[in-house]
Structure formats: structure tokens, C-alpha cells
Image 1 (tube, protein in one colour):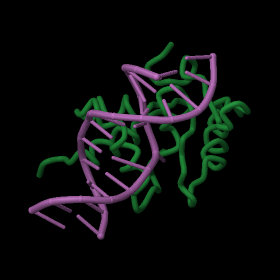
Image 2 (tube, chains in turn blue, orange, red; image 1 turned 30 degrees about the horizontal axis):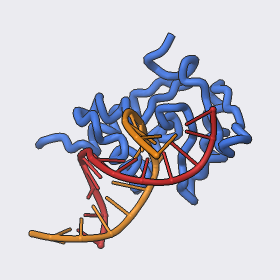
Image 3 (cartoon, helix red, strand yellow; image 1 turned 30 degrees about the vertical axis):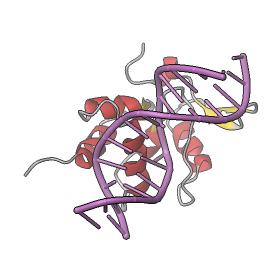
Length: 109
DNA sequence: AAGGTGACTAACA
DNA sequence: ATGTTAGCCACCT
């Protein structure tokens, strides 16, 4: 039974430690398709049952929270991250939440 | 089975 | 610098 890209993505996301974040692009690379960042977002957006999947630890490569989901809003995402000790900044200019990738990206520091 | 859809990004203007 | 554009690609219908 061959593991699909979706399955790999889910496994990788589940593996992100609490208090850390990863970008869509990084996940795409680990899942074996380095240019599929957009597909990763699409997949996360369409997962039926998000329970057990720390979807909120996935953000854009620049550190912005780009969620558009009505069920699990970007507000929810900010709160879940803060609960894990991640500092989330409101970028008034861009009107988006932002987290410092240098501090919280799983591959940094 | 072919065409549409994004929780993306790097590259432009 | 800041906003826009255009490839990208796995999934869904």
C-alpha cells in the first residue's frame, strides 16, 4: 500500500513538536515534492477530521498565519499557538498574525 | 477523465 | 519597499 502525498503530509504535521512551527514549503519538501507548498495548504484545508493533527503549527514561509478556514479561524490558530508558548504578533500593516520563524521554526536555532 | 481549486511562494514592476 | 503576478501541484468533482 503506497503512502499518498496526503498521508505523508499528515504524518509530518503530527510530528511537529509543541511550541514549534513549520512552513507549507518545508512540509512539501519533506513529503517529497518540493514545489507542492500550495498543495499542502489545500490538503490541510480539506482534511475531514483535524483531531490529532496540529494543523495550527503550519504557517507560511514568511511566518504569517494565512488560514482562511471558517471553522478553524486564524484567531483560533493564534490562540492555540499562544497556548504552547509561541508569541504571536498582530501585524497591523499587513493585517495578519505573525510569528518569528527564526525563533519558532523547527529547523532554526 | 479533464478541468477547477486553493491554509503557497518566489519573482516581478 | 510594497503590491501584484504567475507558476505550482495534489485533490476534488
